[in-house]
Every structure is written in structure tokens, then in C-alpha cells.
Image 1: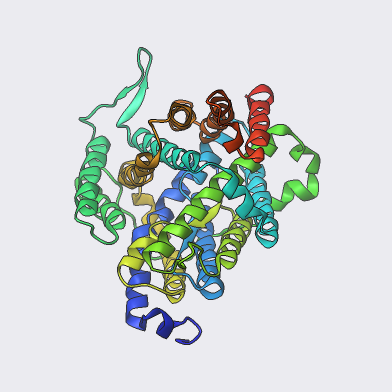
Image 2: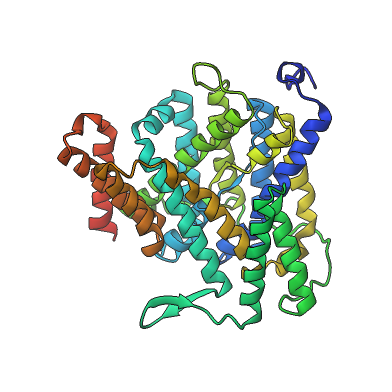
Length: 436
């Protein structure tokens, strides 16, 4: 086992890998609560999504750990689940069953692109500045969704949005959780987001704001309502998939997961000291394939796109260096399947702090954007701004990708624009003409 996971080469031990794996799990376990709540808004069964979330994390993390041998855990991604529920289903009116088909198609395309090496080519074609903007925009969107779900931000006829009733118990509980999360993350407490959810839920139950569950452990919920549903439109109604709207959904899943995974892989590998001197990463192809397989298999279980988690850096900071820590994460997700009754205490007020803190972490990429270059600032700003304001991740991406080649051409920098960006320009222009 030690030889297979390169313990001696990486200078690690079983104890360091186990501690690192536990730390990573604690840092990302909030997805077990948040993902079912978000996808439930799309009409999906919370119990089935809870199981699908855990199963997708188990499969993805095992493949990453055993095949790619990286200390990186996978699970259904934040931002991508919000896009699935609030854009694909609630805005476009696409049934969640067809949405899962879109995730499945994106996963299959990921596999093909990873096998051919095209995936790296496409990633390299997108300017780094827009990658930063997309990450930051998704962070703002997630934060807005969290605050809205907790009642901290509500609708207003005169100002569109405004502060909610700060005297309500659920709102006060969410604010308490946000302050608690700030304390934990400022103090760099491993698993701070997870501990915030647990403590906020306990406080909610003690104060009567959150209903106390009748049990803690139960049988694993049925996943029958979501398992294999992604294949139904392909088998029984393939013609319903032949439209521009479905194409945009698949392309958006592809695009967002492209950069989320690539950025996470590089960030975690760099923190673990696994990047070669020439800037490349060993076994990168296997890592990308792990993500692709995780997405494909996860869609069959019944959840949105599976991706690499940047919270894996917390496990690396705790000592993880090999894929063995990812195996530990998979084991812990398997054990979590028996704790579904606890999901009822994880209301919008309880999970809002996690969404807000994840948003803060993602928005940090703003500092890397070259704001002094106006031709860069315009598409980057519009990408970031239009995601929460348009309440759509796809809208933000489309606007940014339309303006980027325009501003670069006007600035006399057209030679710096990759040909694929011009293709994307027309794709997203078509998105506004025929879909929106």
C-alpha cells in the first residue's frame, strides 16, 4: 500500500494521510447538506439527492485517489448545482430529468476530451483573466443565493432587493452562523465551515428555530427516483434534446467545470509541492479523467456536475500528500450515508454561512484580474456583475465572452485572442438571440 501510493517518494505516512483525509472531509462535508437543498428547489427528492451526492463523492474521490494518486477529493460542485437548479430548471423551464441528461452529456464529452488531450487545448484557449472573473462571479452568485435562502435578502417592489426582517429567528440564526464562520476561517480552523453548520444547527434546535430530528441514524434513503433518469430522454425522447437551449446547458456545464477543476488541480498540487520545475503536473491526464468519470457516474446517480474541491488544500495543509487521503475521504462519505435524518435540521438559515464563506473564497480571484487594462476590465467586470444581477451563471459567462473579443480588437490586441474565443463569441451571441 505504501509503495503503491508513493509514501516514501512523497515523504508521508499513514497517520498524516488519515489526518489529511479527515480534515478534507470536514472542510467539504457541507455539500451533503447544501446540495440536496439546492436541487430540491428544482423538484428533486432530497433523500435521493443526499445519497447521490455521497455516492458521487465516493466514486470521484476513489478514482482520483487510486488512479491519479492525488490528495484531491471530488463531489458535486457548488455553483454548478446552483446553475442546474436556478437556471436550467427554474429559469429555462427544463425538467430536472433532462438537466441530468445535460450533465451526463458533459461528462461523456469530458471523457472524450481528456482522452484526446483537447481538454487542455480548450482550457488554454480561454484567457486567464476571464477564468478569474467566472470564479468570482460564481462566488457572488452563491452568496446571493445563500442570503436569499436565509431571508437576509428579500424581494422589494421599490428597490428590487432589500434587507429582510432582522428580528426573525431564522434570520438571526443565519447571521450568528456567518459570524461564527468568519471567526473559524479567520483563525484558520480546519473544517471551519463544517463546524459552523453543526454549531448553528444545534443553536437552532436549542432555540426552537430549527425542528429537532426524531433520530440521528437511519437506513439509507432510496435513490430510485433519480438513479438512471439521465438516460431516459436519450432512450425515449432524443428529439427533445435537439435544441439550442439544451446545447447551451451542456456547454455551460462543460465550461464551468473545465476551469473549476483545472484551477483546483493546480492549486492543490502546488500547495502539496507536486508541481514539476517546468510548471507541469504529473499524472494530470489521470486527474482530469477522474473528474470526467466522476461527473458521468454522478449524473447517473442523480446529481449535478462532480468536480475537484479546493477544500482539499486544507487536507494538504494538515499533511496529506498522496491519493490515500482521497480514499479516506471516500470512506467517510460512505459512512455519512447512514445519517440522513440530520438533513432536516440543515435549513436555509443553517447552510447560508457555508454559501457565503464559499463565495468569499471564490471572489478572492478578483485580485488577479488586470483591472488597469480597460479591454480586460470590461468583460471581466460584466462577467462578475451579470451572474448575480441576472441571477444566472450562464448569462454572466455569455456577456463576458461576447465583450472580450470586441474590446481586444478595439484595443489592437486581436492577435492575442485565441481562435476558439471567436467561436465562443458566436455561440453565446446565438444564446441571447435564440434562448434568451
